[in-house]
Length: 79
Image 1: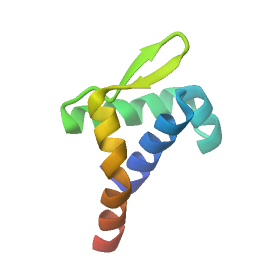
Image 2 (image 1 turned 120 degrees about the horizontal axis):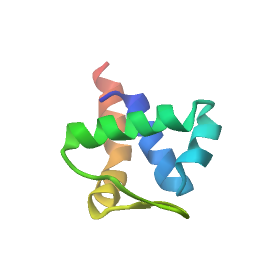
Image 3 (image 1 turned 90 degrees about the horizontal axis):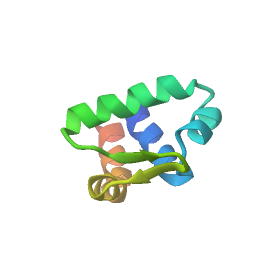
């Protein structure tokens, strides 16, 4: 996981849509899905439930979002 992956996660969470977040990040939705799957693999947890109306964060997704700002801060300071 790197800071870019975590920022992508945060944007999907805030937008409620992989397609909208991908547009803002100037990447394909498939590329963004790959990043989210990578995070889910690393955390061994599902972060979003995908529905026809968008993405809904799971309980773990809510938890990660709540703590991700502090996590990003520490990750950037380690570099």
